[in-house]
Picture 1 (cartoon, rainbow, N blue to C red):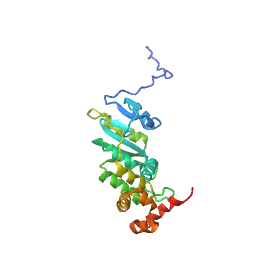
Picture 2: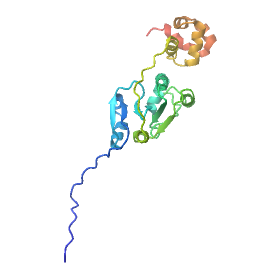
Picture 3: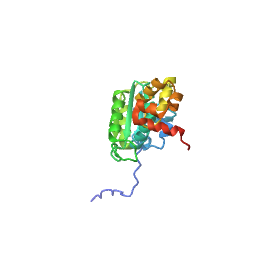
Picture 4: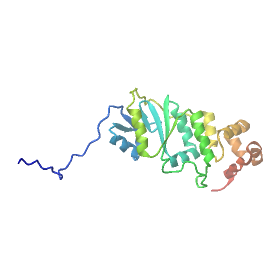
Amino acid sequence: MQSKPLLDIFSKTKKEEPKKIQAQKIIIDYREKNSFVASELIHLGLEIEFIELKVGDYIVNNVAIERKTVSDFISSMINRRLVKQLEELQQYENKLLLIEGVEEHELYSDDSERGVSSNAIRGFLLSIALRWKVPIIFTKNAEDSAKFIYLLAVKKQTESSLNVTKKSLDKKEQMQFILEGFPGIGPKTAKKLLEKFGSLKNVINAPIEELEKEIGKKAEIFKLVGEEY
């Protein structure tokens, strides 16, 4: 009787390497190196390259993507950094804001430590979609983010343009941007004060009573200007 060959169950199997996908190279800002998204993209078989991007965090098939974790989204919303980034994204015809980690972190919260209400967050999300025309994608985690980017990469390829620059604000925009750095002073309030008083110096030096006539209780923040550190 002919015996059957024994199966060597102890033989080592070769570790599978990620298959290279026919897709456009993904350009990633070098500051994203510590993100799990990049390693997940490699695992999915995509080719990536780290460079210094002037605008956005990822460039995929001529789509500029700004990636924010939930906590980064909230902080950049409060300090107005995201506003500038959204303005710079306008140089791209196709752009996305990717908010990552909604499965692990609460996006809408009235926690006093955040210093922002849930309705303020909702209102800002509406502004992103309606004012800046930037679509928003919410992802569960880094792996989910990578899968969205993967789908963009394997779509029909188009030529990517990296010929974008940081947007230079004109004089009026710079003045308004400085005023918006004061808590509670939004774009409309800043513009109103500058139109009323004519310059940053005049706004800061204006009596609190006059400021209160224009913007109410928001004027109290300007009391800090005369305080010692």
